[in-house]
Length: 177
Ligand SMILES: [Zn+2]
Image: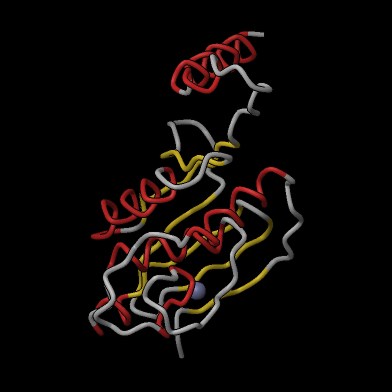
């Protein structure tokens, strides 16, 4: 009962935060799906992980990436190691990803790596278009690419994924190699 009351209070807080939508005249917008992420094991990359989450939050409306509160189970766990950046998804919005130092040491832009790997957790596959304007082009864009924001098409796909609760099969995505 207490938990339920706390949950209701949290919901009210979340709704207050998106008050603009709640007062709009059109059909009530559904509350965005909240995904908790845990950057506690991302070592020196914790702040860039937060940056990647904020980039998505600034571009999509149907899902929000939020640092996991104490006592909650995260949907997404972020780690760091010396391999390639990679994501291992279990379903839409759930899984883990690695901030791999192999790409960092090659000079790839760290916020772009973080936003790209979050993109996999949001249901986007790799699309190696070679274009810096595409976030999911990943390592196919030049190392010098510093765009860390999804294209309009990528953001629209994510909004659609969460509007329809798209089924996404478990998947492993690697930055390169
Ligand atoms: Zn990828």
